[in-house]
Length: 205
Image (tube, rainbow, N blue to C red):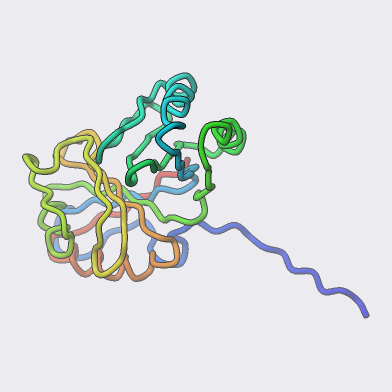
């Protein structure tokens, strides 16, 4: 009997869920950038391992190990606190990322997450009002300044978000959603942003 081969084609986390374009009310009160092609890995280290991990991250990327709910970034990488002894490393490109993870495995437990999360960047003059419809965290600038991160939920979906450097329209948030929940998250976000007008773009690494 002849064997039947199956060809698999890689798909972006947002493919089939949302595409570049615009919808909702007039204007672009909410700007959504779908981020694809990122390298992501969780790092877990015991207290005795943290100094060595901190030295490795500083040497490789120039990033200091966050000790609280914050994120540090360089031109190519971000490192977000994800709980006591846990961090999420995000690379702008997957090129060489597997090798980087292998090198860090000497000082921490490393789990590749690149295909397990869907990531988007939110900005716009109405982004705060949109997130306030479902986010459990107080995102007022005094409570959630640039560089702060949180593990929380929106529409009963566990997410991680952080506030990156402000853009022309003010606050910019990075949101990471389990890939299996990307469709459900988009259903909530699109409904919440529609009244303000929403513009969608894609950024491929």
